[in-house]
Image (cartoon, rainbow, N blue to C red; front, side):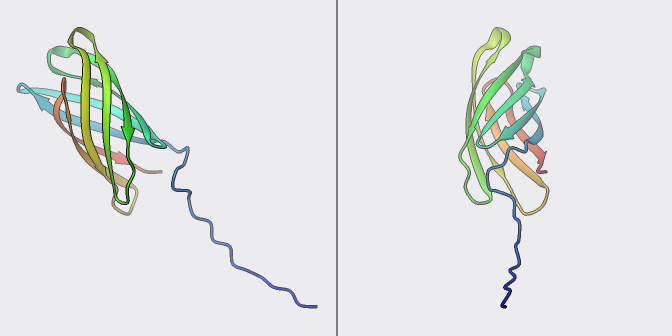
Length: 116
């Protein structure tokens, strides 16, 4: 009787239902802006506060490539109305990622996040 054994290696799927949260800090018109976001699959949501205290939410679409994920988004910000954003997340090996972006209400911003 011959018994064959194989080594099974489990690796995480490239698209998981594990959220990737981040924080963002930026500047627009000499005002500090900030927000928090989360990405699941290739979609994200971000809540932030911009110049003049305008607070809102954005829906983001990511385009995942190896080590980099460009994104574009639309949002609603109180008295500012519709906002648009775009940028890129860089995903080096490890449990963190970082990004750079522009938001029409919150200005130029940087992001840092955690991968679980």
